[in-house]
Image (cartoon, rainbow, N blue to C red; front, side, top):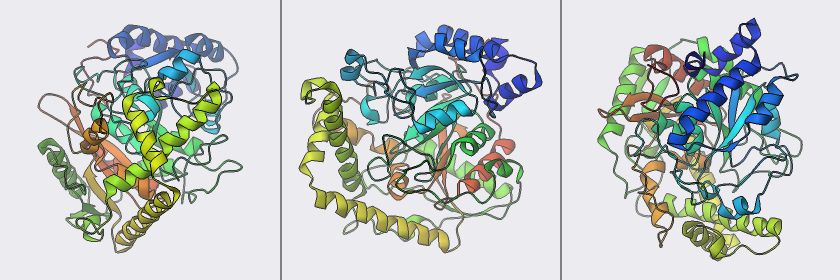
Length: 487
């Protein structure tokens, strides 16, 4: 039964429970067995919560849309009280730090019926586009174990791709949902800014750079989970506009007529786009046209003041990202009872935090203001008649493990991440939702995703186009060499 379940998405597993064909405890036991068998080879799960999961599965579960379905939490962001929360850091690992409370999103995952069997690996503080923290070691990509699954939700991406669980928690501050989804052949939706609550301890992260949801194997799982967990919580600083109708209504909407622009050149001058990434976009554009949508070469590059004299996206992103690391290390110092020093963290983390301290409040507000200007320009481009923007998710195929080395000086690892985040990070700065759709594989069998971006608040359009593409070019039967099922 475990092999059969490994190939089922979360919706199908939930249907087994609702129909009485399977008990939650059977689903959880099977997932734990798969984890025990496949995880040692990929290092996706770093905290074992199987005992708690078994106890939960035999008790009274909430009657949510995913009742009894096994799930994993990323070890950064959403958390349950009393469970490990190490953020990819040796400092917190050695301190044995546990979350002091349930976050709002974790509570909503539980209310949806999901049962958490463990927590997944992440780079230190989620900074880079690979998952190789000094604290827990490298997570391997199930499609090619010499490559990274991406970051910072790489543990979650690897676990879902390997069939341990059908979907897992992920969050995204520069591509950390979409990059692992691209590298691991998964669906990865970054919702609109503040679509999901980060409370109660956090209002927003770096003025709204980060948002949370999941990586999954099917569009319907992502839609159903977003429908279950979206919306504000008391005290949230601001909220995303409510959806026009239930997200699941988009799954069966096969209407054409969307106008789609294409951006296949990176807006960062130093980044070249790899051939397979361009090929993925070209194939996706043809598939969209076959479904009755119009695709043309208009893009946000037509309206953004890039190049000489325009905003430096790389450096202005660094301002917000570095400020976040500086603030986090200061907060962690309060938790551990002493200031965090350079020996407590990886070289990149420390160097970025120092930049965060050096760039003053005026620089921070200036760069946030520039990003708000870009957001208005992008909104204006959509208002000019476009429904979606199609891009590569990444400018490169999944890098080899070891290429992004956070121990190197001069922000080398940050700069090495630019090809991975060249098409994703901008929309963290401007707030629009984006989704990775797994439509392409290289000749060597490595997934290469494409990204669709929608206007602010319009995840419905992303779910609709992704569901249509999933029906036209199904990917569910494609499984990696490191997969938790025979055959």
